[in-house]
Image 1 (cartoon, rainbow, N blue to C red):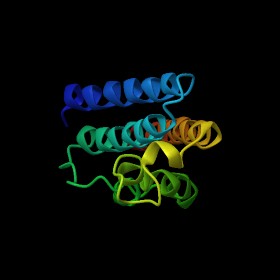
Image 2 (image 1 turned 45 degrees about the vertical axis):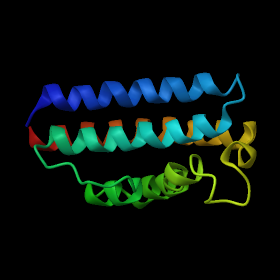
Image 3 (image 1 turned 135 degrees about the horizontal axis):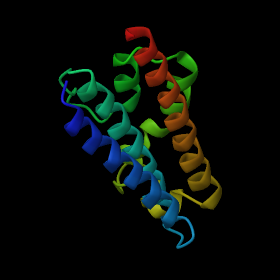
Length: 133
């Protein structure tokens, strides 16, 4: 278990979440949504590192969540963010270019969803740590 590396992943996850929030007032709604995904991805990957497991080579955060045996309610929250890895960045994925597909309501929802996931994952980690004791 490499706690130092896990902490780096976690700190970057928190930073990405913070940057996601900061993009909303400047109308960077696509960027905020993408960064919400990135924050959750790095959070979940930090869990793998902390447990001494190899990080799966995927950006599908629903797969990462399943690999951590997270509850279905958390996975449901995560599913909504999974598409933003590609949809928020690539112009050939949707009908319009990404920045036209996102608005403030969507971006706020994505960032709020990521915050909720952070809180729930923190509870899961705490329960797991207590179970080890």
